[in-house]
Image (cartoon, rainbow, N blue to C red; front, side):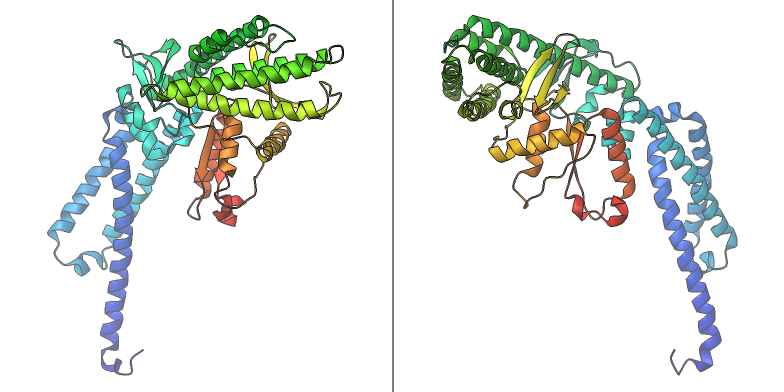
Length: 461
């Protein structure tokens, strides 16, 4: 574009072509290098090489070509002469890029097979999954990968035979598994075995809590306001946090329904039930006060604090039902409350909200901080539960920091459900979003997409 270029126009054009060719070659070279580094990190693992022998052999052949190419580049000191007009170099780079892409697709297909066996592996990135697969002979290295796979499992306990025999939360509380899980299999297989053993264990613990809660219902006496303090204390310390929570909620449900039915013939049935709920709450608060002086009871204290919050919600919910004159079991004043039951025919725990009932999902949930259930939270629970019953999704609307995500987590915890929270940004691609949705659909858990509006319209469509 300069007016002084006239005498040098041919030379400038020649250099422009040379530099353009060099730039294109270098861009291709960098792309091949990035692809080679990714694939080389995978096939350098002996475990992956054993599982994919043909692909590993193919990569070794490509790696020889790459090493020869880099050796020649080291010997060549003039980049322009080496890259410009070197059709053989560009042809080699293009061939390497295509073949390395084939190796990468082989890896993706291999990982897809792993995820088909254990769908929770959709919740980890390809890099994490590759590290997990490459270390499958060493299951003790599993701990860094547990966070996205399970809600509150921080580590796994092993016995002398290297079998998984227990799961532990972040505060050190350990729950023995109902059956040991062997680790002499592929990583995805013993991870799936760990998931099934965890759910079976929690299901059995919840069933024991249900039996104890039902026994407390009979021991306390029907139609009066007595509370067996010793039985309540034994119950609180005999079960894990979520089992205690479900058991007390089931006990509250049975007591309230019984008082509603007996109110037709006994004038003071509802009043006695109200006093009983209040006295049980007082005993829970007293247990928290006793645990506060013991520095070793952090887990127990958090468990009791969660039970106190639920007790407060039970007291307020019953006060609302009590204020409705002539309330019946089928009236909305009662059916809108969160109620817990045990279905004997299928031997499963049930959680009912309004006209919808869900199976308890038996995800291990440690004694974490519980969300305060307010009247607004209860309305959110009703709306979300009815939406889920119609196989639809729901979205809570409100300013940032008002507890929308925590409300969904709280509802999931009450249902024993694993809630996967995915933080969406403008950098979230459709492949990442699709992978999360695949995992949520196959696992059967909940996906909470935080800041979904930040994703681009192309991703959302």
